[in-house]
Structure formats: C-alpha cells, structure tokens
Length: 221
Image (cartoon, rainbow, N blue to C red; front, side, top):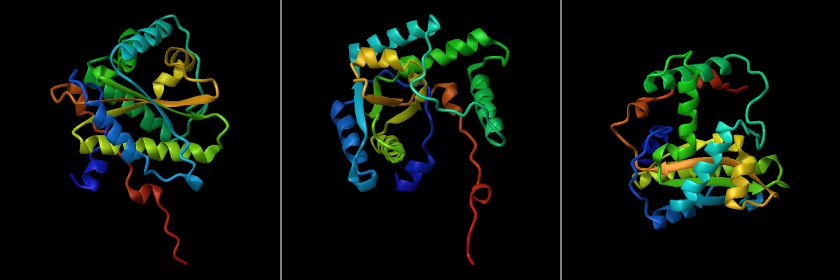
C-alpha cells in the first residue's frame, strides 16, 4: 500500500471483527505516529489504550450514563449553529448511515440504539483515547490531530482500520473516572481499532468529499 493509497482509502469503519490485535502492533503504530509535527516539538499528545476487561467496563459505564441521560460534554466540538455547506454535509452523512443500517429517518429509538454502538467500539477489540494537558494552547490541538491522523493511516499499513470517535467526549466525566484520567488532562477523542468486518453493510459507506476547486484559492500575483 502506497502512502497515497493509505490516505485516500482511509474511512471510518463501523463494524469490526472480534479478532484480537497484537499489542506490539499497537505500540509500533503509536511509535510511528509520534513522528507527527508539533510546534517546537512539544509532542502534547497522550494516549490511553483499552482492551479486554477494561474496554468492557468502560463500555458498560458509558452506555449506562447515556441511557440515564447523563450527557456532559468534555468540550464543544461543533458550533451552536452551522451554515451551508457544512450543515448539508452533516445531514447527508447521517441519512446515508441510517439508510445502510436500515433505519427510517423518523425512527428515533433505532437511531439512538445505533448511536450507542459507538460505546462498544463497533465491536473493535482495541479502544484508544487521546488526551493532552488542559494548559496547552490551541496549537497543541493541531498537533494532536496530526498525531491521530498518523495513527489512522499507519493502522492501515498493518491491515487494521479505525473509526475516530469524538462521541465519547459527550460523557467525558465517566471516561475520566473509569480510566483514571487526571482532571488536568482534557479528553480529545476516542478511536476504535481492529480488523474490518468486510461483510458488514454499514462499512459500504464512503463519504463524499469536496474537490480542491471548492476549497482552494490560488494566489499568484
């Protein structure tokens, strides 16, 4: 797989096989990802890996909180209101996903059940949680995002796929408590990692992307 193939072929996988992932492979991926750029080489990212009983314990705790309506955002990921074309893009990927799940747009209980699948890592055996010190500035968010992207691309080099999951941040206090993450660290995102279930219909989702002509402006004079 070339670098271009690894990047262009990346997508969020939402159904994984239960097959275990060798911890040494995870360590290799994280070591490679640490070559991400960071301002003045501060390397702000911190990672919490959950597998086995720890993974299951976290899943049960967050699902219980979700079912009890105990949502408490770690931070505001989206703006309070959204203009076009961003709103239409967001709605379309949601409708496309529900369609693959076989869920009608107005079937809110089924939509909620589908959302809860996030908190079982879509069946993936490995969960990753990315944090950093709350005292860092905005640049560290950029650095950590580049690190996360490296993780997703390098996973593909080892035959693995991923799904970044910011949804865990809707229940940040629970994740902090179960994983004993200090209060001085902010939870940036979760991520599922494992072997893709190629038979799963939901994994047919390929999100659309705007072309460079839509988001690029050339300055030549």
